[in-house]
Each structure stands twice: as structure tokens, then as C-alpha cells.
Image (cartoon, rainbow, N blue to C red):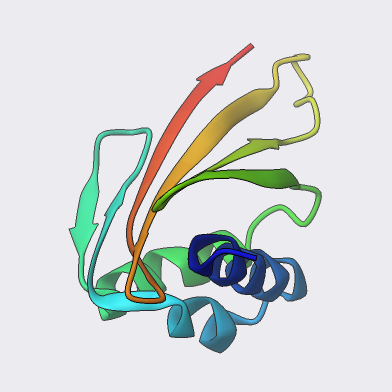
Length: 111
């Protein structure tokens, strides 16, 4: 298993357990998190604060397995349909270096 795959496996396992400490342990000190709403946070502490809010959110988030190409990982996610029938779907794009996630970019749409 590649270094990238191993880190992302740990990250997603921690996410699935709603283990914030485990999620944050996978992040580089200078990680950059870019949300699909256009906001960008920098640093492990700032990203951890955003992830803490997300982990407290909807428990029905579905995360598909990660595809890895070199230092990049790509994962599909979706939420269950809202009351109006719309669904949030997207792709997380991770960059891993030296055994830690240095960037997480979220691309999503409401369908």
C-alpha cells in the first residue's frame, strides 16, 4: 500500500468513527483545506475546528473508497436526499506528502 493510500485509509477510518483526534493526526501542520463554498482555512488547528463542526453534523454521510494516483487521493461523498429531494454530492481531492495530508479540496454540487 502506498504512503498516500495508508494516510487516507487512516483519515477516513477516523472520520467514520467521528474521531477528531485521529482525523487531525493525519494533517500536516500547514494543511490547506478548501471548501466547496470557496472558504479556505490554513493550519492543522483551523482545519481541525472546521472538521469538528462537520463531524457533529449529519451522520448519514456516505464516503466511497479513495482512488490514489501518486501523492493525490480522490474520494466521492454524498448525503441522503433532503426534504426537497436534492442531494449534495462531491469529490474530495487530497494531497499527501511525508505521510500527512497537506491539502484537502472539496468539489461538490447539489443535484
